Length: 68
Image (cartoon, rainbow, N blue to C red; front, side, top):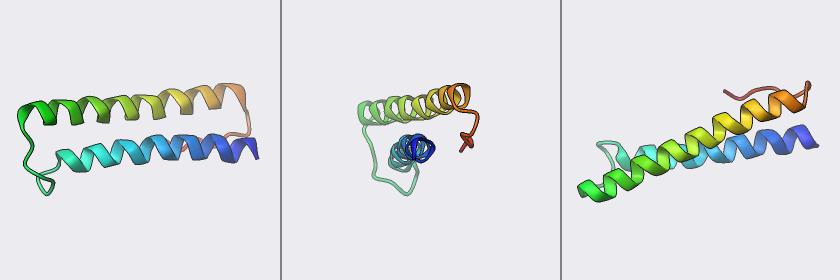
């Protein structure tokens, strides 16, 4: 159960990262420079959280299967 929750956490972080990536995509809305900077900062934040959580979970649980 714990491994599932760990993977779920990383999936959530990746989902949020993808959300902000889509906001920055050409198909997304036309963003002002300030809004684009905010979206980029959020994209990096969620992606870094996913990487950090994935690495931390690998270190504490030998049964954890990395999603990255």
